[in-house]
Amino acid sequence: MLMIAIALISIGVMAGYTAYLTFRHKQKLTCMAAMMVAMTASMMSSILLGTVLGIYTNGQMLIPTVLAVSAGLAVGYVTGRPVSLMAAMDGMVSGVMGGMMGAMLGVMVRLQSPMVVIAFVNLIYFIVMVLLVKLIHEEVGTTERAGNQFAERTTVTSSKLKWYIVPLTFILLILGAKASETGALSIENLFGNTIVSTKTESPGEVKEKNGFQIVDVIVKKDGYSPEEIKVKAGVPVKIHFKKDYEGGCLSYVLIKDFDITQKLQTGTTTIEINPKTSGTYKFTCGMEMYEGTIIAQ
Image (cartoon, rainbow, N blue to C red):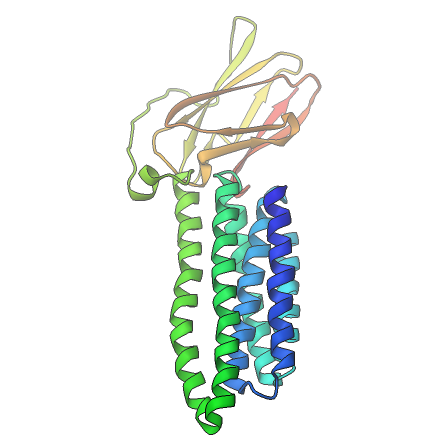
C-alpha cells in the first residue's frame, strides 16, 4: 500500500506543479513547448496510474483503463489549455495512450514482482517530471533573454526530449510483455529459457488413490487439456498441472473459488482442492485469457 500512496502523491504533486507552471508562464511558452509539456505530463501520469491500478484490480482491465485514461485526459487538458487548444489536444491524446499502456503493463506484471515494477515506474516518472519542470524553466528563461529566438530553440529542445520519452514508454511495454511470457521478472528469464520435456498419459482421466481424486491437466501454450474435469463432490482432488515449457501467459493458474494463485513450474505442479458441494469451478491463467472447468457432481 505504501507504493500505491507514493504513486498517487507523485502524480498529484508533480502533475499539479507542472500544470501550475504552464498556467503561470502561459504568455512565455510557445504552442510547441506547451504541446511537449502537456504530452509528457499526461502520458507519464496515466502510465503510472494505470500500472498501479492494473496491479491491484485482480486482473481486470476495465477499471484501470477507464480511470487511467480519464486521469490522462484531465492532466493533458489542464496542462495544455492555458497556452492553446492544440497543446491540450496533444496532451489528451497522449493521456489516452499512456492510460491504456499503463493498465496493460500493470495487469501483465501483477503476479511477477509488482512492487519492483511500481518502484521502477515511480522512479522513471519522477526523473522525467523533474526534467520537464527544468525544461519549462529553461524555455521561460530563453524567452526572457532571446525573445524571437524562443520558438526555434523550443523546437530543438522539445524534439530532443521526445526521443528520450518515447523509447522509455516502449521499454516499459517490452519489459511487461517479456515478463508475461517468462512468468517472472528475472535476469535469467529475460534473456533465455530452459526447456524441460514432460510426458503424461490419459489427461483428464480421474483416478482415486489414498482418499484423493487424481487428475492430470496438460498446460499447452494455447490452453489446457482437458478443459473440463468431472469429479465427485465431497472428495478431495489433486490436480497435476503438467507443463513442458517455461514462461508464457499460462505460467500461473488461478482458482478463485478456492482462493488459489499458484505459479506453475516446468514439470508437474500439484494443487489440492476440496469441492464439498456440487457446482462448477473455473481455473484460469494469470491474465484470465485461458480457462478450464471443474465440475463437481
